[in-house]
Length: 158
Image (cartoon, rainbow, N blue to C red; front, side, top):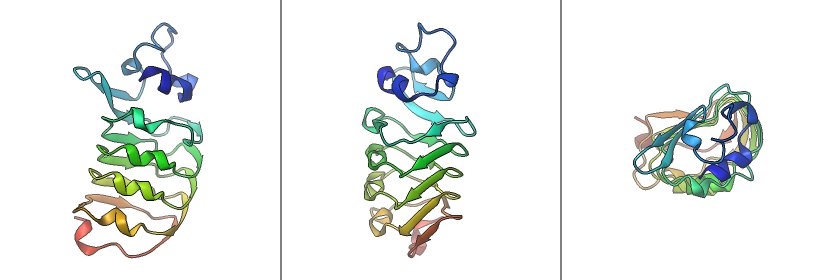
């Protein structure tokens, strides 16, 4: 889905040759693809000097994404509702940014999550009770540095 990514990708992370930009994001820095399925499976860009919001990013095109690490950048505003369309996601790391507001209810749709790191932002509100249903077991849960309230079920974190 190169056109979608190209619209939102920081130009400093794109390849030097503009001929590859719109044809193969698998050659971009921080992108890992399943070459057989021709789909993006990981976006791994911690400390990449990315600044902006994810509000207009179309996450539904990344149906095979298993890992999204955008930690320690300068992302701000809300965690977008569209992030809930990433049902195959096992790792989500948005820690150490400037995100604020409540966790979107759509995050409960990320049924494969085992590593959730959204700490050190300005996220507030109640922890999503429906996030911890469907037998989700988290090996990593990092919420510190926010103002999130609510209980975490004991059998949720390993």
